[in-house]
Length: 378
Image (cartoon, rainbow, N blue to C red):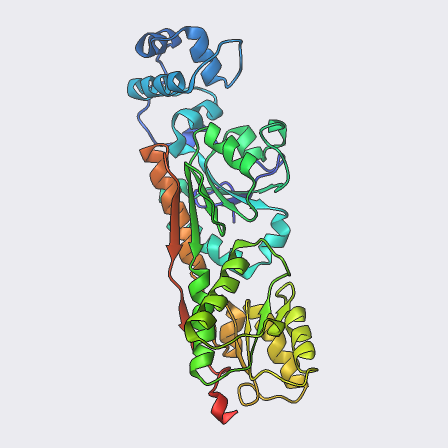
């Protein structure tokens, strides 16, 4: 995509960060208003006005209440400063939408679920807000102690709406909230005033998967799960859903049937080797990712097993590989997650700070294809 276009996508690096000119904004704002006029309207000194507009500490202590009063006066007067950073602080609806990811953008770029989230975000962005910047953050950094380490879209001041994906970094969130920016976090579950979290109903997803297999008569079901002891919210919720399903059914579950791995194709294949080296072999496998399910299917076939005749397999996410293999899976609404996140930040940038925390959980549903069958016919 062309980062110069209205619906472009750019990487938030120091060299690649484009500073947009005011000519890109269509508005009737007045640039002839003086500092004295703003100071009079807001009831503060011109020094305080200068400190706020230039985002500099001139030894003048400016409270949050005063800042809001000054920016309100500027908006009412129709004043627009020459510095783009001041424009974005004063008129946050004109700033970029920034997608912040923990770790490496390159790693996220090959993640099919992230690609679907991004597609939904771009599709939901309003015509005036389709310039989306990608930037990385360090999940272990202390951005309050070291603000110079903040991702460049925050430091440059060109972005004003933030969607975070990955591991939670509380100092990053606090740094954004301190600047009065709307923040949405995807894939985690935290209660922070001013932050919206958007996620799929992961627990319901695994309940649907296991319930489908139990209703088909399977009693020896193996689980290909994520890394042992993982704190990833999605994995924790998927595992919780499995426990809830078994508790509700009254059928005992042997935890030895849980195989941990990184949910890659390779880990799914390795899980089959472990499971079929045992005396009691499973008749069905639920994998917490479609990629792991594809690996399990491939390895099962190489061992001479028929899917679903000898082994039923269920995946999770409904990625393209699931439809290619005709894999039964659980649809996770990645596109809807991205769209909902954009709608939330765009709404909040116009309505103001969210005083409480907000949690949005989107529904999931099962997609039955050709990789599962009744245990009776196995």
